[in-house]
Length: 224
Length: 222
Image (tube, rainbow over all chains, first blue to last red; front, side, top):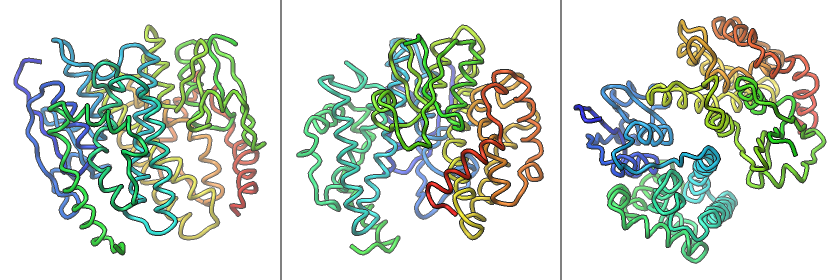
């Protein structure tokens, strides 16, 4: 893949889905143009054209052709930019691949549980807290004693999950919980990932994410 | 236990996906029925899919795989020497994965708005949304005989099982999917010409009488 290629990523900085794509591109050493789209206030023509079905970020545009849905994007990046001693996200063994895909799919539910904490009120918030903590504990048990879900190196499940680390502070503030107290090994894992440039450049400051959510709540009329 | 076991439920479109993929690859397997309508889940299901406790579950040499599209991709990877369901090029693969994911995000939930509700706002919304989704899929199919091109592929496997629930949607929702999406129905008929599909799909009227109407009663969706 040495020829000149045009790689563009449409994204919005708070999106954990976008962070997955950024980490994957950085891990593979792919040069790309980052185009910010404020999906809350102004979905651009380019976004609507490149993702007419869902109208969401991230969108990877490779030589003009769009790829949508963060996990589809990560798999595309993994398959296309392969060889030359580049990292591999999905294992080659079919059973291990299936396990990685299963957990990545499960992880998408975690964002929905967390969302209840900051966008809902009353009982729904309590439900969200329990679901979030239970699911993070389940992921923690899956990690076991490995440094990463991928084993010795960052893999597909790490890339799928670590972006939520930037949202933990938000969940903790709105939910009045401590994720570190509930899942210390998972937080250790997240900090280990954050030592990697690909991850810490992709994840925004958790306080900025919190302020963004405060703004969203106002916008959606949720009482503080 | 047999080398390949599929825990399934006769009327599940998700289970049908696994059945079609196994048949396409010529894999012999033991089919085990989970009698979901009894409300009881077997110890084997709870043990092999403790996270979701849902079928289908594929058990290969004792190792379980859950989530229907994860299962289909596993079947593709484990029996890679025959009948590929995904194209070889990464871009083609990304498009197939996108559309299979689209089917997962939309069809079941939109269909449920129709069958699990009385005539009214929610049901109308479900009908509108379902037709929109099916038309988008019809557009993606274009002039190709199958989503996979000349032969069935990942998206065909992901979508065609929902055909068995169309009769239920149409009867309860009082509308015609054929009238709205004739090309899609033609595609279904083409798929049904393949033994892997015709042997995996169940009779739509049986789904209506023995599954959907039973579920409606069970959950009080009247």
